[in-house]
Length: 84
Image 1 (cartoon, rainbow, N blue to C red):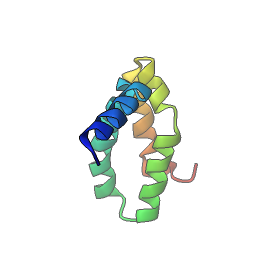
Image 2: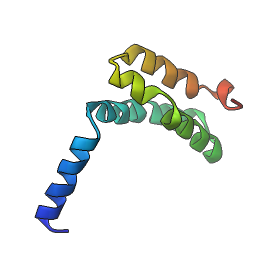
Image 3: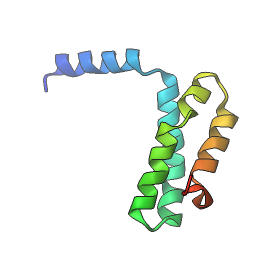
Image 4: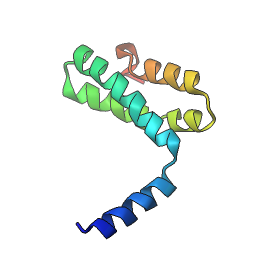
């Protein structure tokens, strides 16, 4: 990939996805290790991660409600909530 094209793509992504996405990725990285240690079944892990991605976490972060986002991530990553 050419440096000019890489720069253009990076700029487009930065304009489309705000700081809340970077924070969301940080939050996912934090919870990822815990989930990998606690959930041995790969399908269950996929379900947990998908629930987090499909949730309102991004919107909460966009509103500056970081604590609420953390609580939602914790709730969704809990093993007792897999059947929801």
